[in-house]
Length: 296
Length: 331
Picture 1 (cartoon, one colour):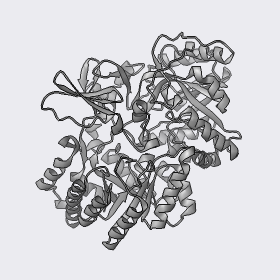
Picture 2 (cartoon, helix red, strand yellow; picture 1 turned 180 degrees about the horizontal axis):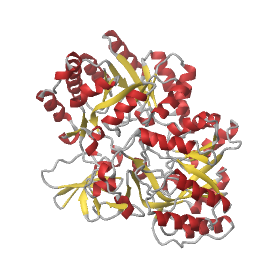
Picture 3 (cartoon, helix red, strand yellow; picture 1 turned 120 degrees about the vertical axis):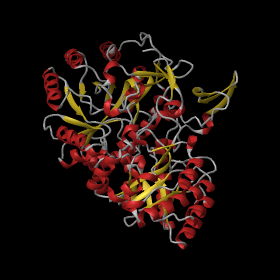
Picture 4 (cartoon, chains in turn green, yellow; picture 1 turned 90 degrees about the vertical axis):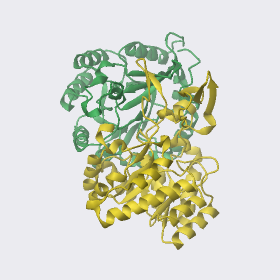
């Protein structure tokens, strides 16, 4: 089992991004995904800046993958995705079928992110035939459904050289919209959003009228209110043939979570050291928000 | 422009055909389609009746098989594809690349339309589906602005169909797991969003509360119109303010954009609402038939008639309508 660090879903100032990835170089992660997957207005990071970070992380021994934008609407956005797919240096994680096509056309191996809908072996077969080498399982697929999918795909010989990755820690990316919910919270139109999401390094809490954590607004992306934590399920994943467990970056905790998972994989005993409520329902075939009952 | 209307049952299909639908889209009575509601949809005998009725009056029938099968259910989806093909439907509306592959290989002459649930929003994605499966048409998600639809019409390798009227999905269809986060069932996996069996209404201190799997979606004061607790349309608290944090309960209505959509080359207008009554289908079909005909005759002078707006507003969700994402400031 290897550990991956997913693309940062939030919008952080440049200095914070650079400081974060400087720390990542010394974290015990094997694979790092880089790039803006949520909103094309979130600059200052262009492809060149990402490539600089990518090369530094590669020099530190990490495998680096570049992740594409998830919702591609404007021609300009497609242009950015095209350039990323043509980088010629690092594998690309496609988060839209437009990117899949661009990568397949170039005949380069590629990965797919959690919003590429692969729910069955037939879908997997199609993408493997086009160059898929790693896929992140859509977050709502349960352990039992994944087991059946991998059994069937394995029986059809689809898994040779194909890795399965599970979104294992972080707020769940649940939905994308044309509308920016962070701008909306400030009564701003998206075209004049003033990059309000920069003020929320971990998203904007959306609570029910009873005050319970419900969702998190992160620009055009809607995340879960609770953090999903599948760390205690790592043995299940190993048994199923999952190759990578993905940790999604947070402004705090990332290092501790990575080290915790590394320790678990190295044989440490589970304990309940995280002090916030987390969920693991999707993995158990329950509503995604269902609370994690066991410690890790 | 073709008018594509919804039908959740034979009476609705007849209402659509009788009021001028060029095509009617239906689904089978299981989780193979994205309106998997109790008491709704067609078995193969009813579908055969529906197709005979529509074809006898010059209308087409499309069958939506637009959810994402998992490993264990796979045969249900292939059976649905085969059944639709044997019934002689005019097109399948499909989202999953596994199902698209099956349909393209087994029934190469049966036209495939890409469902909105596949959320193709750019020309490269459309090219992917055309090259891999030979799709002829794609239904666009309700997240694109009018300018973006125009660009896509210029660049798209296939015909495009857009939503004209009905419930407004504020999220990109097919990439939304909000419903399964709360209930375990989503449009992708089960063909449902915020399913009714998880809904609970409760009166507390003179206020009506709507809950979805116990999560408080909204509270209504006396006299407030209490809508169905679709979870993205509730009132939530953000930084101390309580409001429709994601979307108000409104309906999409693009009547006034018809001349522009026609000029761009949009091939078909889709009306949402397979879960709605035959009376709804009759009313919206009639209005849109008249509107499209008026627009074809004289696009330069096309003006939606007040009685059309009135008729549509009376059946709209939340009884308000919006241009949605087509109108940039909405975003």
